[in-house]
Amino acid sequence: MTKNEAPIGWHIDNSYARLPNLFYTKMNLNPVSSPELIILNEELAKSLGLNSHELKTEEGVQILAGNESPIQADPLAQAYAGHQFGHFTMLGDGRAILLGEQITPQHERFDIQLKGSGRTPYSRGGDGRAALGPMLREYIISEAMYGLRIPTTRSLAVVTTGEKILRETKLIGAILTRVASSHLRVGTFQYAAQWGTEEELQALADYTIVRHYPTIEGARNQYLQLLQEVIQRQASLVAKWQLVGFIHGVMNTDNMTISGETIDYGPCAFMDTYDPETVFSSIDTYGRYAYQNQPQIAGWNLARFAESLLPLLHDNEEEALELAQAAIQQFPELYYTNWLNGMRAKLGIFNEEMEDAPLVEELLHLMHVQKADYTNTFLALTFKQQEDITMLKGEEFKQWYHKWQERLTRQPQSKAESVDLMKNNNPAVIPRNHRVEEALDAAQRGDLTVMERLLAVLANPFEHSAEQAQYATLPAAQNCRYQTFCGT
Image (cartoon, rainbow, N blue to C red):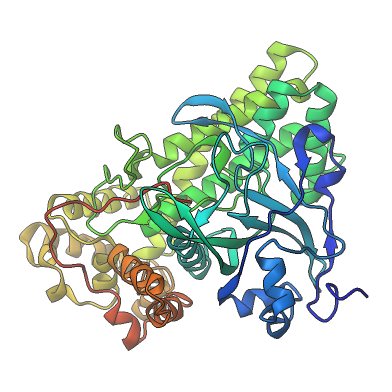
């Protein structure tokens, strides 16, 4: 054992580095002057087989800062492409280094990536660094998503670098350690299809199957099955986003993972007032990635994935295109089925009836017209607290409520069972935008307690505790709409 293997617990492999050289550039580390640990995810560290106490030592912090690496690591920056707001471009890890893949005590494999770790050949003129605020923001939101049972990359740690970075002003430099099932993206396949050979594309597809979909390895037309599996995972993922009011903000093809995990928490936010046209990102001026458009954009992105796989789907180009189109055409129904079943659960409905969709749509229409809070409306329904939501006092709602109560009688489960189902599907708390900003402002002033309390209530959002109720309150009325920025 080397000093980096024990006692910290690193067990690094580098399977991605065994792909053709096209897909990455080997990297030297970009040391920083005086790193300091800001926050460590001890629960995640334990699940990875890492010793939290040792990660907090100087040796551990040096690794989290990118000054040193585990002895087995083979640091690299990944190459990929992507459609950014519909425009195709060459991309890659412009400010991230993949140290390698941690093999856990349960024999699972997770990428360990340092985000904000300095320039790479893909930086496109950028400095490759990141600021403390955006890195803590990703930490908070990604861990909140994990608590909400939504597939996501996770955050192991944030360290400051001891250096300032220049944006509009000088900001505190920081590095996030991101953990992911992998960083394979739709854009990785687009890159291979555009600039690689068919053999390199096939190598990437074979690697993906072994890593994420081993049950289809060796199956008849395993590449078609790969496409179908990714479509199913993304249909489930985006439905989960919609069900909690999460708006990703930048659904470019390089931000859609092949594993089906949420990745890249830049201009994301959670919706307060229910409005399908909600956009938070400052750069999304035309609402391409608005809440209501996320399913459609996911389908569009998956079509780009299918295009990249065409050479592997069939030797005959027309046959390949037909297979791809047939697979992609399944996405809208798969998504809608996931979403409607999720809405049934939010309303305590166990079985299926044709009238369920109109019942849900009528409720959403009322919420939109009455400018009701999305999360709190479902909470009020769960706990029969109609007095808390203005909309729930109106005549139209009373008519809807009567139909809903009638619907609940047409299933074998009891009212108590319905309430339990609702409690398990309607979170007591989400990372409200004003609460996230409050935590970030305090943290950048050196006070981490606000963020720590927020993370604690977000860890189990279905607990419905008294403390969580305090975090369900809405922000004070503001004269300008909330905006997020691509700071990560």
